[in-house]
Image (cartoon, rainbow, N blue to C red; front, side, top):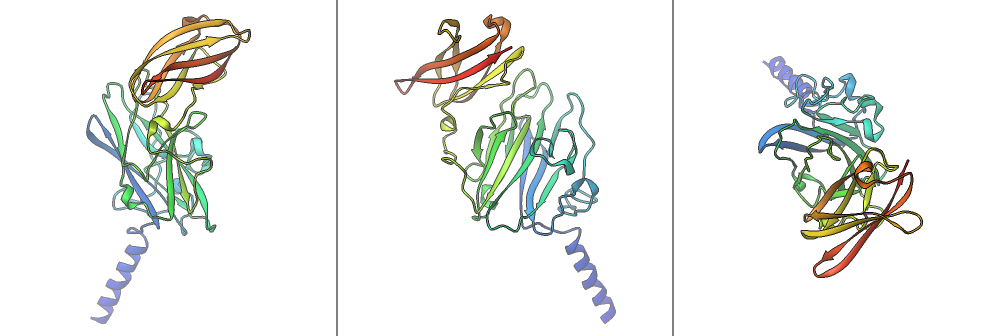
Amino acid sequence: MKKFFFSIILLAAWYCSGYAQLPEFSLHVKLFVNDDSARTVIFGYDPSASDSMLYGKETWFSAEFPPSGEQPEPPAFGDDFDFRMSGFYVNRPELGVDGSDGGPIDIRKKPSDNSFTLDYGIRCHVLAGTTNARMEWSPQSIPAIIKHITLSSSYFPHTIRLDMKSVASFVIPLKDSGEDIYSNIILRIYYNKEIDQTGVPSDPSLLSENLVCYPNPFDSRSTLQFFVKEECDLTLSGYDITGSKAFERSIHAFAGENNVDIGKDDLSMHTGMYFLRLTGNQAGKPFAKYSSILVH
């Protein structure tokens, strides 16, 4: 009988140390597509993690993702639906060399420093015909020692969209082209560390006072990104290096983040540097945002 109970204890210890293993910190992020639950990814850290997901050496959350927990998924191709932890935009070669590599779980090895940052990537591609998509998580499960978890686009200049400690969801902007700027997302954990510069405002419309253009230099099509506090009509103007107006365009903007496509043929811009100015009114007061763009 003693041998029987001893065997049960060993079996339980083996199970807890392996298949039931839980990291020091983890956060479940669930994707909803057309209001239906689609997939879940998990990221976090632990002192015992090895940063070797693709080789099946970790057993985190194996009950949710059997048989081995942290494991790779087959690459997604073309217009396939995809939602996974990826390493392409955060210099994580152990997760693969392509943006479609990776898997549902990424538990990083916790640094021994008292203060550090850790970067994670999420690839999110929804199928054509999707009317709405959002990510949800529980800010209450983030410990106080983690000061911020920022979410930003992989597109330069990686403007911070929100702090996951302050909000519980992110409605993903969808575009007809399917090439949304949040198809690849960068998450950054600030462990016992504040964000450089001024921090993350709770109001997303205050995240950037600038007019961001990407890609830059300009190709056949680029996107202008900007934030406004309220719905309004704006005027976008472009000037060449002599100060002559090259184009002007009216834009109807909505409260929050706006992304506007511009085309070289539409604007009749020639090779050279152009200065962009976006003007309008917010709360009855005029404002302007500026940027520049290089056209080959």
